[in-house]
Length: 195
Image (cartoon, rainbow, N blue to C red):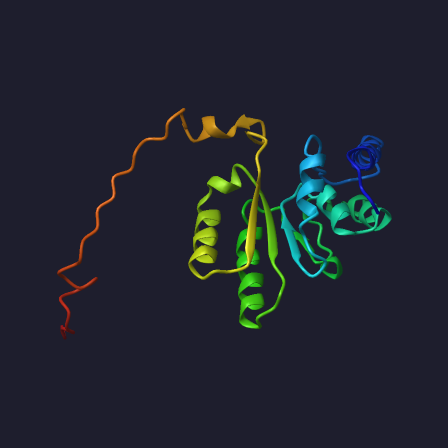
C-alpha cells in the first residue's frame, strides 16, 4: 500500500476509537506528527532489511508492509507495545533500549554470513541517552556492523523534557581525556601468589 500521512493518521484514529470504546484491554502508544519523516526514511529500507523499533511502532509496521487488518488484530489482542512480525522482518520491544542488543545480534549474524541486509533500529531520544544504546552503538561502530540507528526525537521522556532530565544546557561541558600506558598489571602483581 502507498501510505500517506493522512492514511497513517486515519489508522491511528481508528485505533484510538477502539481503545476509547474499551475494545483494546491493554496499553497502546499512538503515533502522530512524524508521518512524513517516517515515510521518507522507509523509502531507503530494502525488503530484505530488518526494522527494529520501540513500543510506538504502528506506523513502522504499516510502512514495513504489515497488512492493516493483521496489525489491527494484533493491537486489539493487546500487543500494541510489543508488535513483532518476523515474516515482515519487523520486531519491537516495550523495554526501554531492549531492542538495541537485538539489533547488534542480528547485525552480527548478517555480517558473519556476509548477507546484504541492514538493520534499521528506531529508538527514542531518551533511549539514545541510555547506557545500553551507547554500548550497542559503539560495538556496532567498532565492528563495522550493518546497523542504521535512527533517533526519533520528540524532546520528551514520557512527559518530561529529555534534555532537562539530563541537565543539559546550551553548551555541553567539556570532558578532559588523557591517555597513558599502565606500568602495572590490571590486577595483582603480574604473577600468581599462593597463599
